[in-house]
Image (cartoon, rainbow, N blue to C red):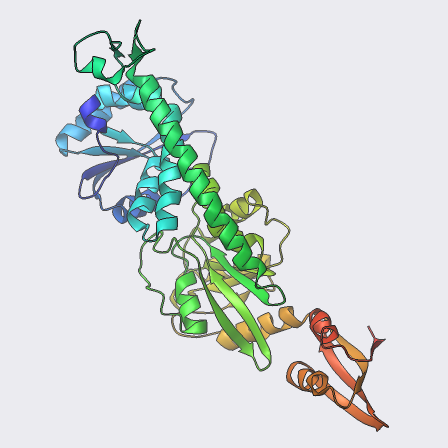
Amino acid sequence: MEKLRQTLRVRKERAILVAAVLRSRDGGDGLAELTALAESAGAVVVDRFQQKIRTINAGTYIGKGKASQLAGRARRFTADVVIFDNDLSPGQIRELEEIVEVKVLDRSELILDIFATRAKTRQAKLQVELAQLEYTYPRLTRMWSHLDTLAGAGGATAAGAVGGIGTRGAGEQQLEIDRRLVSKRITELKRELENIDRRRIREINGRRGLFKICLVGYTNAGKSTLLNTLTDAGVPVEDRLFATLDTRTRKWTPSKGTEVLISDTVGFVKHLPHQLVASFKATLEEAVNADLLMHVVDVSNPDALKQIESVNNVLEEIGCGEKPILEVLNKVDVVTNIGNLETAQTLYPDAVCMSAKTGYGLDDLRETVTAKYKGTELLLRVASSQSNGKVQSFLRAHGRILNEQYVDSTVLIDAKLGRNQLPELRRLRPQAIEITDA
Protein backbone atom coordinates (compact mmCIF):
# COMPACT_ATOMS: atom_id res chain seq x y z
CA MET A 1 0.00 0.00 0.00
CA GLU A 2 3.04 2.28 -0.08
CA LYS A 3 1.97 3.96 -3.34
CA LEU A 4 -1.38 4.91 -1.78
CA ARG A 5 0.33 7.16 0.77
CA GLN A 6 2.85 9.01 -1.38
CA THR A 7 0.73 12.12 -0.81
CA LEU A 8 -1.86 13.23 1.73
CA ARG A 9 -3.26 15.81 -0.68
CA VAL A 10 -6.84 15.49 -1.93
CA ARG A 11 -6.92 18.21 -4.56
CA LYS A 12 -9.09 17.24 -7.55
CA GLU A 13 -9.36 13.68 -6.29
CA ARG A 14 -12.64 11.77 -6.30
CA ALA A 15 -13.57 11.27 -2.66
CA ILE A 16 -15.94 9.06 -0.72
CA LEU A 17 -16.84 10.47 2.71
CA VAL A 18 -17.44 8.20 5.68
CA ALA A 19 -19.02 9.00 9.05
CA ALA A 20 -19.09 6.27 11.68
CA VAL A 21 -21.10 7.18 14.79
CA LEU A 22 -21.55 5.13 17.92
CA ARG A 23 -25.20 4.21 18.45
CA SER A 24 -25.05 5.74 21.94
CA ARG A 25 -24.11 9.16 20.55
CA ASP A 26 -25.82 11.89 18.62
CA GLY A 27 -25.19 11.71 14.88
CA GLY A 28 -24.36 15.43 14.73
CA ASP A 29 -24.51 17.14 11.35
CA GLY A 30 -24.04 13.92 9.38
CA LEU A 31 -21.51 14.66 6.68
CA ALA A 32 -22.35 18.32 6.04
CA GLU A 33 -19.18 19.72 7.60
CA LEU A 34 -16.91 16.99 6.21
CA THR A 35 -18.35 17.73 2.76
CA ALA A 36 -17.47 21.40 3.16
CA LEU A 37 -13.97 20.47 4.39
CA ALA A 38 -13.38 18.07 1.50
CA GLU A 39 -14.57 20.60 -1.08
CA SER A 40 -12.41 23.27 0.55
CA ALA A 41 -9.44 20.93 0.07
CA GLY A 42 -10.31 20.63 -3.63
CA ALA A 43 -11.76 17.13 -3.63
CA VAL A 44 -14.77 16.10 -5.72
CA VAL A 45 -17.23 14.27 -3.46
CA VAL A 46 -18.69 11.30 -5.37
CA ASP A 47 -20.34 9.36 -2.54
CA ARG A 48 -21.22 9.53 1.16
CA PHE A 49 -21.27 6.56 3.53
CA GLN A 50 -22.80 6.91 7.00
CA GLN A 51 -22.74 4.09 9.50
CA LYS A 52 -24.01 3.55 13.04
CA ILE A 53 -21.69 1.23 14.96
CA ARG A 54 -22.06 -0.41 18.37
CA THR A 55 -18.35 -0.32 19.17
CA ILE A 56 -15.19 0.89 17.45
CA ASN A 57 -13.44 -1.96 15.67
CA ALA A 58 -9.77 -2.08 16.62
CA GLY A 59 -8.71 -3.15 13.14
CA THR A 60 -10.82 -1.11 10.72
CA TYR A 61 -12.92 1.19 12.97
CA ILE A 62 -16.13 0.21 11.11
CA GLY A 63 -15.61 -3.55 10.93
CA LYS A 64 -14.40 -5.71 8.03
CA GLY A 65 -17.88 -6.26 6.62
CA LYS A 66 -18.58 -2.55 6.27
CA ALA A 67 -15.04 -2.02 5.01
CA SER A 68 -15.73 -4.53 2.23
CA GLN A 69 -18.93 -2.64 1.35
CA LEU A 70 -16.87 0.53 1.24
CA ALA A 71 -14.40 -1.16 -1.12
CA GLY A 72 -17.24 -1.99 -3.49
CA ARG A 73 -18.42 1.61 -3.51
CA ALA A 74 -14.88 2.84 -4.10
CA ARG A 75 -14.68 0.63 -7.23
CA ARG A 76 -18.16 1.66 -8.40
CA PHE A 77 -17.43 5.37 -8.13
CA THR A 78 -13.77 5.05 -9.20
CA ALA A 79 -12.74 6.90 -6.04
CA ASP A 80 -9.18 8.06 -5.42
CA VAL A 81 -9.51 8.62 -1.69
CA VAL A 82 -11.76 7.72 1.25
CA ILE A 83 -12.05 10.37 3.94
CA PHE A 84 -13.29 9.50 7.43
CA ASP A 85 -15.01 12.02 9.69
CA ASN A 86 -13.19 10.28 12.54
CA ASP A 87 -9.61 10.14 13.79
CA LEU A 88 -8.11 6.79 12.86
CA SER A 89 -5.07 5.00 14.25
CA PRO A 90 -2.16 4.13 11.93
CA GLY A 91 -3.14 0.47 12.12
CA GLN A 92 -6.74 1.19 11.16
CA ILE A 93 -5.61 3.25 8.17
CA ARG A 94 -3.31 0.46 7.01
CA GLU A 95 -6.01 -2.22 7.35
CA LEU A 96 -8.60 -0.07 5.57
CA GLU A 97 -6.24 0.70 2.69
CA GLU A 98 -5.54 -3.02 2.20
CA ILE A 99 -9.29 -3.71 1.95
CA VAL A 100 -10.50 -0.61 0.08
CA GLU A 101 -7.41 -0.38 -2.15
CA VAL A 102 -7.43 3.42 -2.28
CA LYS A 103 -5.85 6.05 -0.06
CA VAL A 104 -7.59 6.55 3.31
CA LEU A 105 -7.42 9.84 5.23
CA ASP A 106 -8.95 10.78 8.55
CA ARG A 107 -10.45 14.10 9.63
CA SER A 108 -7.23 15.48 11.12
CA GLU A 109 -5.20 14.75 7.97
CA LEU A 110 -7.83 16.52 5.87
CA ILE A 111 -7.78 19.64 8.06
CA LEU A 112 -3.97 19.67 8.02
CA ASP A 113 -4.08 19.46 4.22
CA ILE A 114 -6.44 22.45 4.04
CA PHE A 115 -4.21 24.48 6.34
CA ALA A 116 -1.23 23.64 4.13
CA THR A 117 -3.00 25.05 1.05
CA ARG A 118 -4.07 28.23 2.89
CA ALA A 119 -0.71 29.10 4.46
CA LYS A 120 0.79 32.14 2.73
CA THR A 121 3.19 33.77 5.19
CA ARG A 122 6.38 32.13 6.42
CA GLN A 123 5.00 31.91 9.95
CA ALA A 124 1.82 30.14 8.82
CA LYS A 125 3.83 27.73 6.64
CA LEU A 126 6.13 26.85 9.53
CA GLN A 127 3.17 26.35 11.87
CA VAL A 128 1.41 24.03 9.43
CA GLU A 129 4.57 22.03 8.69
CA LEU A 130 5.16 21.54 12.42
CA ALA A 131 1.58 20.36 12.94
CA GLN A 132 1.86 17.93 10.02
CA LEU A 133 5.14 16.45 11.26
CA GLU A 134 3.87 16.10 14.84
CA TYR A 135 0.82 14.30 13.48
CA THR A 136 2.95 12.07 11.24
CA TYR A 137 5.72 11.18 13.71
CA PRO A 138 3.81 8.64 15.84
CA ARG A 139 2.32 7.17 12.66
CA LEU A 140 5.63 6.35 10.98
CA THR A 141 5.57 2.82 12.38
CA ARG A 142 2.72 1.39 10.36
CA MET A 143 1.67 3.86 7.66
CA TRP A 144 4.49 3.01 5.25
CA SER A 145 5.89 -0.35 4.21
CA HIS A 146 9.49 0.69 3.40
CA LEU A 147 10.71 -0.24 6.88
CA ASP A 148 13.45 -2.60 5.73
CA THR A 149 16.74 -2.84 7.60
CA LEU A 150 19.49 -0.98 5.76
CA ALA A 151 22.95 -2.52 5.49
CA GLY A 152 25.87 -1.07 7.40
CA ALA A 153 28.68 0.83 5.72
CA GLY A 154 30.63 -2.34 5.08
CA GLY A 155 28.55 -3.31 2.06
CA ALA A 156 28.91 -1.94 -1.44
CA THR A 157 25.18 -1.49 -1.94
CA ALA A 158 23.39 1.80 -2.32
CA ALA A 159 21.85 1.21 1.06
CA GLY A 160 25.28 0.89 2.53
CA ALA A 161 26.00 4.45 1.45
CA VAL A 162 23.91 5.76 4.30
CA GLY A 163 26.30 4.25 6.78
CA GLY A 164 29.74 5.31 7.90
CA ILE A 165 32.32 4.71 10.58
CA GLY A 166 30.55 3.42 13.64
CA THR A 167 27.53 2.11 11.72
CA ARG A 168 28.87 -1.33 10.76
CA GLY A 169 26.85 -4.18 12.11
CA ALA A 170 23.20 -5.11 11.96
CA GLY A 171 22.35 -1.91 10.13
CA GLU A 172 19.63 0.63 10.72
CA GLN A 173 15.94 0.38 9.93
CA GLN A 174 14.48 2.92 7.50
CA LEU A 175 11.94 3.64 10.24
CA GLU A 176 14.70 4.82 12.57
CA ILE A 177 16.12 7.09 9.88
CA ASP A 178 12.68 8.54 9.20
CA ARG A 179 12.10 9.18 12.89
CA ARG A 180 15.48 10.84 13.32
CA LEU A 181 14.95 13.14 10.33
CA VAL A 182 11.41 14.06 11.38
CA SER A 183 12.49 14.65 14.98
CA LYS A 184 15.34 16.89 13.82
CA ARG A 185 13.02 18.93 11.61
CA ILE A 186 10.47 19.29 14.43
CA THR A 187 13.21 20.67 16.68
CA GLU A 188 14.29 23.16 13.98
CA LEU A 189 10.71 24.33 13.41
CA LYS A 190 10.03 24.77 17.12
CA ARG A 191 13.20 26.82 17.52
CA GLU A 192 12.27 29.09 14.61
CA LEU A 193 8.68 29.48 15.82
CA GLU A 194 9.91 30.30 19.34
CA ASN A 195 11.80 33.25 17.84
CA ILE A 196 8.61 34.35 16.08
CA ASP A 197 6.68 33.89 19.34
CA ARG A 198 9.11 36.17 21.18
CA ARG A 199 8.82 38.86 18.51
CA ARG A 200 5.02 38.65 18.55
CA ILE A 201 4.88 38.79 22.36
CA ARG A 202 7.10 41.91 22.30
CA GLU A 203 4.76 43.36 19.70
CA ILE A 204 1.70 42.58 21.85
CA ASN A 205 3.39 43.98 24.98
CA GLY A 206 4.06 47.17 23.05
CA ARG A 207 0.29 47.70 22.83
CA ARG A 208 -0.14 48.05 26.59
CA GLY A 209 -2.49 50.86 27.46
CA LEU A 210 -4.64 50.13 24.40
CA PHE A 211 -7.89 48.19 24.69
CA LYS A 212 -7.50 44.99 22.65
CA ILE A 213 -10.36 43.07 21.02
CA CYS A 214 -9.91 39.69 19.34
CA LEU A 215 -12.37 38.22 16.85
CA VAL A 216 -12.87 34.50 17.42
CA GLY A 217 -15.38 32.06 16.04
CA TYR A 218 -16.10 29.04 13.91
CA THR A 219 -14.51 29.03 10.48
CA ASN A 220 -16.54 30.90 7.86
CA ALA A 221 -18.64 32.67 10.50
CA GLY A 222 -17.84 36.09 8.99
CA LYS A 223 -14.90 37.34 11.10
CA SER A 224 -12.93 38.75 8.16
CA THR A 225 -16.05 40.38 6.72
CA LEU A 226 -16.73 42.01 10.08
CA LEU A 227 -13.11 43.24 10.34
CA ASN A 228 -13.43 44.81 6.89
CA THR A 229 -16.75 46.42 7.81
CA LEU A 230 -15.38 47.93 11.01
CA THR A 231 -11.95 49.05 9.81
CA ASP A 232 -11.73 48.99 6.00
CA ALA A 233 -8.91 46.47 6.48
CA GLY A 234 -9.26 45.09 2.95
CA VAL A 235 -8.87 41.48 4.10
CA PRO A 236 -9.69 39.05 1.26
CA VAL A 237 -13.03 37.37 2.01
CA GLU A 238 -13.99 33.99 0.59
CA ASP A 239 -16.94 31.71 1.23
CA ARG A 240 -14.82 28.74 2.24
CA LEU A 241 -13.46 27.16 5.39
CA PHE A 242 -10.16 28.43 6.86
CA ALA A 243 -9.83 31.30 4.38
CA THR A 244 -7.76 33.20 6.97
CA LEU A 245 -4.78 31.71 8.84
CA ASP A 246 -2.79 34.83 9.67
CA THR A 247 -3.63 37.38 12.35
CA ARG A 248 -4.46 40.90 11.19
CA THR A 249 -4.67 43.79 13.64
CA ARG A 250 -6.26 47.15 12.89
CA LYS A 251 -7.30 50.27 14.81
CA TRP A 252 -11.04 50.80 15.25
CA THR A 253 -12.92 53.79 16.64
CA PRO A 254 -16.33 52.51 17.81
CA SER A 255 -17.26 55.98 19.15
CA LYS A 256 -15.78 59.46 19.53
CA GLY A 257 -12.80 59.40 21.86
CA THR A 258 -12.68 55.60 21.91
CA GLU A 259 -9.88 53.86 20.01
CA VAL A 260 -9.25 50.14 20.26
CA LEU A 261 -7.17 47.49 18.50
CA ILE A 262 -9.11 44.68 16.86
CA SER A 263 -7.53 41.44 15.59
CA ASP A 264 -8.80 38.64 13.40
CA THR A 265 -7.71 35.05 14.12
CA VAL A 266 -7.81 31.62 12.52
CA GLY A 267 -11.26 30.03 12.59
CA PHE A 268 -12.08 26.95 14.63
CA VAL A 269 -13.96 23.74 13.88
CA LYS A 270 -15.08 20.89 16.09
CA HIS A 271 -12.28 18.45 16.91
CA LEU A 272 -9.59 20.85 15.70
CA PRO A 273 -6.37 18.76 15.72
CA HIS A 274 -4.47 19.58 18.89
CA GLN A 275 -1.27 19.71 16.84
CA LEU A 276 -2.68 22.75 15.06
CA VAL A 277 -3.73 24.41 18.30
CA ALA A 278 -0.22 23.90 19.68
CA SER A 279 1.66 25.05 16.56
CA PHE A 280 -0.58 28.11 16.10
CA LYS A 281 0.17 29.25 19.63
CA ALA A 282 1.73 32.52 18.43
CA THR A 283 -1.28 33.31 16.27
CA LEU A 284 -3.72 32.53 19.09
CA GLU A 285 -1.66 34.68 21.48
CA GLU A 286 -3.83 37.59 20.31
CA ALA A 287 -6.83 35.94 21.97
CA VAL A 288 -4.90 35.16 25.15
CA ASN A 289 -3.85 38.80 25.57
CA ALA A 290 -7.15 40.41 24.50
CA ASP A 291 -9.25 42.52 26.88
CA LEU A 292 -12.42 41.38 25.11
CA LEU A 293 -13.20 38.40 22.87
CA MET A 294 -15.79 39.10 20.19
CA HIS A 295 -17.27 35.68 19.39
CA VAL A 296 -18.71 35.86 15.86
CA VAL A 297 -21.45 33.26 15.32
CA ASP A 298 -23.04 32.31 12.00
CA VAL A 299 -26.56 32.21 13.42
CA SER A 300 -27.96 31.15 10.02
CA ASN A 301 -26.17 27.80 10.36
CA PRO A 302 -28.46 25.03 11.71
CA ASP A 303 -25.60 23.86 13.96
CA ALA A 304 -24.80 27.33 15.33
CA LEU A 305 -25.19 26.29 18.98
CA LYS A 306 -22.87 23.29 18.54
CA GLN A 307 -20.37 25.56 16.80
CA ILE A 308 -20.46 27.93 19.78
CA GLU A 309 -19.68 24.97 22.03
CA SER A 310 -16.76 23.89 19.82
CA VAL A 311 -15.27 27.40 19.87
CA ASN A 312 -15.65 27.62 23.65
CA ASN A 313 -13.82 24.28 23.99
CA VAL A 314 -10.84 25.59 21.99
CA LEU A 315 -10.83 28.86 23.97
CA GLU A 316 -10.72 26.80 27.17
CA GLU A 317 -7.83 24.77 25.76
CA ILE A 318 -5.71 27.85 25.01
CA GLY A 319 -6.43 29.47 28.39
CA CYS A 320 -9.15 31.95 27.43
CA GLY A 321 -12.02 30.35 29.31
CA GLU A 322 -12.32 33.22 31.80
CA LYS A 323 -12.02 36.06 29.28
CA PRO A 324 -14.97 38.44 28.85
CA ILE A 325 -16.84 37.41 25.71
CA LEU A 326 -19.33 39.33 23.59
CA GLU A 327 -21.40 37.07 21.34
CA VAL A 328 -22.09 38.58 17.92
CA LEU A 329 -24.93 36.76 16.16
CA ASN A 330 -23.92 37.37 12.56
CA LYS A 331 -25.78 36.74 9.26
CA VAL A 332 -29.23 37.53 10.71
CA ASP A 333 -30.16 38.75 7.22
CA VAL A 334 -30.08 35.19 5.85
CA VAL A 335 -31.60 33.30 8.81
CA THR A 336 -34.26 30.85 7.64
CA ASN A 337 -35.02 29.18 10.98
CA ILE A 338 -36.21 31.93 13.33
CA GLY A 339 -36.38 29.37 16.16
CA ASN A 340 -32.57 28.98 16.11
CA LEU A 341 -32.10 32.73 16.34
CA GLU A 342 -34.57 33.04 19.21
CA THR A 343 -32.87 30.19 21.09
CA ALA A 344 -29.47 31.85 20.69
CA GLN A 345 -30.88 35.18 21.90
CA THR A 346 -32.38 33.44 24.92
CA LEU A 347 -29.11 31.71 25.81
CA TYR A 348 -27.06 34.86 25.19
CA PRO A 349 -29.32 37.81 26.11
CA ASP A 350 -26.44 40.31 25.85
CA ALA A 351 -25.53 39.22 22.31
CA VAL A 352 -25.59 41.69 19.44
CA CYS A 353 -27.59 40.68 16.35
CA MET A 354 -26.11 41.98 13.13
CA SER A 355 -25.08 41.38 9.54
CA ALA A 356 -21.44 42.16 8.81
CA LYS A 357 -22.23 42.07 5.09
CA THR A 358 -25.11 44.62 5.08
CA GLY A 359 -24.12 46.65 8.15
CA TYR A 360 -27.35 45.90 10.00
CA GLY A 361 -26.85 46.14 13.79
CA LEU A 362 -23.52 47.95 13.45
CA ASP A 363 -24.62 50.84 15.67
CA ASP A 364 -25.67 48.39 18.41
CA LEU A 365 -22.27 46.74 18.20
CA ARG A 366 -20.46 50.07 18.49
CA GLU A 367 -22.52 51.07 21.54
CA THR A 368 -22.00 47.69 23.25
CA VAL A 369 -18.24 47.68 22.66
CA THR A 370 -17.94 51.29 23.82
CA ALA A 371 -19.78 50.42 27.05
CA LYS A 372 -17.46 47.44 27.66
CA TYR A 373 -14.42 49.57 26.85
CA LYS A 374 -15.40 52.26 29.33
CA GLY A 375 -16.72 49.95 32.03
CA THR A 376 -19.04 51.13 34.80
CA GLU A 377 -19.57 54.89 34.64
CA LEU A 378 -18.25 56.73 37.70
CA LEU A 379 -18.87 60.25 39.00
CA LEU A 380 -15.52 61.94 39.64
CA ARG A 381 -14.15 65.20 40.98
CA VAL A 382 -10.79 65.90 39.38
CA ALA A 383 -8.42 68.61 40.56
CA SER A 384 -5.82 69.68 38.03
CA SER A 385 -3.46 72.53 37.32
CA GLN A 386 -4.92 74.90 34.76
CA SER A 387 -1.69 74.53 32.82
CA ASN A 388 -2.30 70.77 32.46
CA GLY A 389 -4.59 71.00 29.45
CA LYS A 390 -4.24 67.27 28.74
CA VAL A 391 -6.51 66.38 31.71
CA GLN A 392 -9.31 68.63 30.52
CA SER A 393 -8.94 67.46 26.92
CA PHE A 394 -9.05 63.82 28.01
CA LEU A 395 -12.21 64.29 30.08
CA ARG A 396 -13.93 66.14 27.24
CA ALA A 397 -12.99 63.44 24.74
CA HIS A 398 -13.68 60.35 26.85
CA GLY A 399 -16.17 61.41 29.51
CA ARG A 400 -18.90 63.94 30.22
CA ILE A 401 -17.96 67.16 32.03
CA LEU A 402 -20.79 68.24 34.37
CA ASN A 403 -19.18 71.27 36.04
CA GLU A 404 -15.92 73.26 36.09
CA GLN A 405 -14.66 75.60 38.83
CA TYR A 406 -11.48 77.68 38.67
CA VAL A 407 -9.77 78.37 42.01
CA ASP A 408 -6.48 80.26 41.73
CA SER A 409 -4.33 78.11 39.42
CA THR A 410 -6.41 74.94 39.91
CA VAL A 411 -9.48 73.74 38.02
CA LEU A 412 -12.01 71.46 39.75
CA ILE A 413 -13.91 69.29 37.29
CA ASP A 414 -17.00 67.18 38.05
CA ALA A 415 -17.29 64.56 35.34
CA LYS A 416 -18.56 61.09 34.48
CA LEU A 417 -15.98 58.62 33.19
CA GLY A 418 -15.76 54.87 32.59
CA ARG A 419 -13.98 52.88 35.30
CA ASN A 420 -11.65 51.28 32.71
CA GLN A 421 -10.37 54.72 31.70
CA LEU A 422 -9.22 55.74 35.18
CA PRO A 423 -5.67 54.35 34.71
CA GLU A 424 -5.26 56.44 31.54
CA LEU A 425 -6.52 59.55 33.37
CA ARG A 426 -4.07 58.94 36.24
CA ARG A 427 -1.17 58.73 33.75
CA LEU A 428 -1.90 62.38 32.88
CA ARG A 429 -1.01 63.29 36.51
CA PRO A 430 -3.89 65.43 37.74
CA GLN A 431 -3.46 66.83 41.27
CA ALA A 432 -6.23 64.63 42.71
CA ILE A 433 -9.04 62.26 41.67
CA GLU A 434 -11.99 61.68 43.99
CA ILE A 435 -14.69 59.13 43.18
CA THR A 436 -17.78 60.88 44.53
CA ASP A 437 -20.32 58.21 43.52
CA ALA A 438 -19.37 54.59 42.74
